Image 1: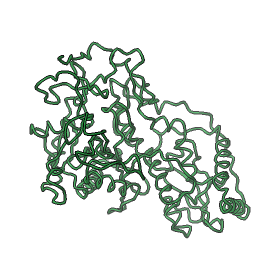
Image 2 (image 1 turned 30 degrees about the horizontal axis):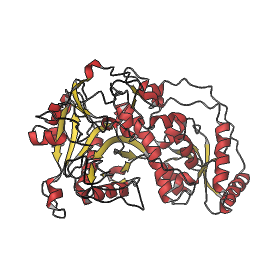
Image 3 (image 1 turned 90 degrees about the horizontal axis):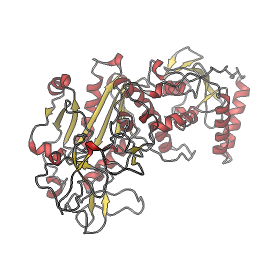
Image 4 (image 1 turned 60 degrees about the horizontal axis):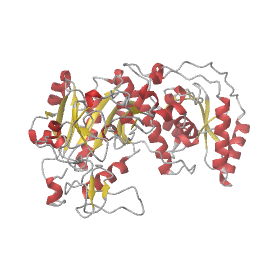
Length: 520
């Protein structure tokens, strides 16, 4: 029989979905509820000026417990006592914080107190090598009254482990800054910001598909996928003939043969998230790493290239560094090896990057699911609804003296296309070329990964700037418009102009002709 359209205008576009995204569903205007928490009663500082010898002995005992294999249990006990100690400690409204650093995030979260005494403690001996007081800008050294970054404080104390948060302790509670980062990350409010966008139709919903087109995000007469909640306007996917019987969307069919059934089970590429039959191309599931599989060598190289960059600071001129981040939910083992330390830093800086993005953009809430789009992208939150599944996003940050000053979000849809829906710079650093520096770093990385095209949205007032200064062009060619309709890119109102830039003009001779032609 002929396919029947479902008119989504007749349905309840706001009540048909249930979400577990915390504050996402609470905002009805441009305000951000994350910053409306009433202040608590300030606590009195309980730290004391412990004598150097006594403090060293306590830290030495902590190191000894680690050596006997009970370190994680002891650290959990310290963190629990630290939570009780700060039970009445007031949070600092994040909007009042002038600099965006990991330390300012810890202070704003109420995990540590501004001007709290800290020690740098030698890993083996447990001796105190440096003393200071923590603040939102860094650490004020007690011996020279110098304002230092966390890494500078470690070097100033005579060490260079490149893991300074692990060896800097709060003098009062003897909890390391690294444990403070874990505590802040596990806080309920912080956890709600990264919760999976569990958008599901209500139990009594008449229609269980999405209320908005995957391509334009508007409602109306939509054709619905029979396998997932995605819906489309036929015109948005250039459908000339309405299909007879069931229809499957581009994300439920093999990217090579175009079929959703036959040729064996469909696997999903870990990079571009398109599905494929192994018989048609791509890799089988890696039994040593079950969730990871790729539709081709190009997606594997992109995935591995991006993950090799995660958490590594890349030095630039004028004291600037840029870092690629992605939130991960892997459990902390307490071993604090290099990879786990890097993962803790990535998560902490993701939390700070969200605060920067929240300054730069008004709350962008999906009108159908009430999901906070910018927040979901920064925290790379997944969803069963493909249109608001942002699990593949990475966050690039530009830092100076531990302060995050510019942030961008990127997602790579395979070798053919990457998108950068948001890039923002803190107010005091605007018009200084910071976004230009970060955007160049992103482009350089994409070029090294052989990604061919970068797509961005732009408000009409800034289109000329993007075209003249950054050499972008309008998305006008019909072939490119059709191609973009087959990707799960972030959608914006029709008033927003879509721009693109060709990053690679020549074909990659290392790939097969089939991969160079691009199958979507």
